[in-house]
Length: 399
Image 1 (cartoon, rainbow, N blue to C red):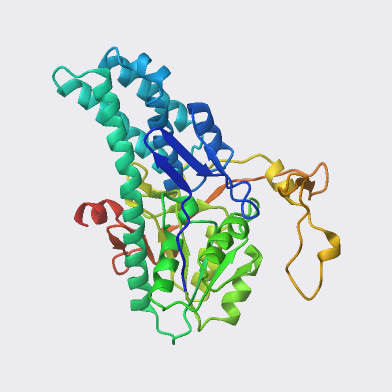
Image 2: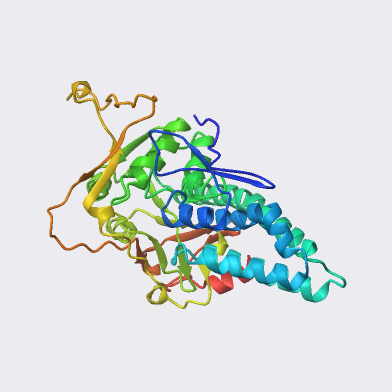
C-alpha cells in the first residue's frame, strides 16, 4: 500500500539540498543551500515549511556554511570567535519564522552546547567548536526521523485502541505534516503512514488548506507518491464529510507549530475549526508533534505569537498553466503547458476583488479542551479525568 518515503532534505557534510516546495506538486526540484541568506530565504519564503523541517534546515544551513573555506578561516582563530559566529548566525536564522518553536528550541540547544564546549574543554580551538556544532546538528537530523517513526507508532496504536467502528477505518488530516514538513516520515502524516503500513487504513482525506494550499499541493503529493488511498477536500467540506461518514472517520490528525504547557496548540490556520467539528461529531481530535514543539515557558495559547502572512498570498494563486482543450467535465486530469525548455509554465493569477481588505494569519490556536490526545515520540499525552487541560510538563518529565 505504501512506497518509498520522500527525502525532502538531502544532507552530507558540506552539502545541503532541499526540495523547493513552492514548485510542488508539478515539479520536483532540489535547491542547494550554500549560505545563511539562502537558508533564511528558503524558510521565510516557504520553500521549506513545517516546524520540525524548519529547525533542521536552519541547523544544517549553518553546518554547511561552517565547513566552507571562507568560514573556516574566519572561525578557526579562537573558540570565542567560533562561538560568536555560530550564535550570531543562529540569531539571524531565527528571524525567518516567528511561530514555530522548534527553530528557537534547536537554536538555543546548539548555542548552549557550543558555549559549554568553549568554556569546559581545555585547549579548545575554533575548529573544536565547529566540530561540536556539526556533531550536534547532524544528530538532530538523525533523531528527528526516529522521533517521527515513534510518533507514527504511538499514534496508530492509540487510534486502533479507541476505534469502535468496523474495518473501514478512515482519517482526516490538515496542512502538510509528512516527509516534506520534517526530516523524514512525518508527524500526523506519519500516523497515517503507520496505519497504512499495518493495512488498517482504508482511506485518508486531506484538506486543501487555504490560502497556501499545503494540503492540495504537498500532502496530496505525498499520499499519491506512497500509494495511500486518499481524497482531497476543501477546508469547508470537513463538517459535511464527518456528518456523512460518522461511523467511518476514526480521527482527525493534525500537526503543531507550538504546544503550550496546558496543551493549547498553534497550528496551520483552519485547525481550530476542525477541532470544533470533531467535537460536535464525536470524532477524536489528535495533535501529533515531537516534544521539541512543546513550549513549557508558555502557560497557554494566549501567549503564542501568531505570524500574519502577506495579503497577496490570499488574493492571488500561483500554479501551472493548463491547456484548456484538455479540460473535461468527466475527468479531473488536465494537461499542463510546458515551456520551450520542457519545464512547467507557472503563472500567478488574481482571485479577489481589488481593494478588499485582507486578514491572513498563518496559524490559529486550538484550546486543549478540544484535543483528545497529543502524540509525541515519548507516547500519547492525555488529560486527567474531569480536567480540560493537559499537564505537558508532568507528561514530558515522566515519559
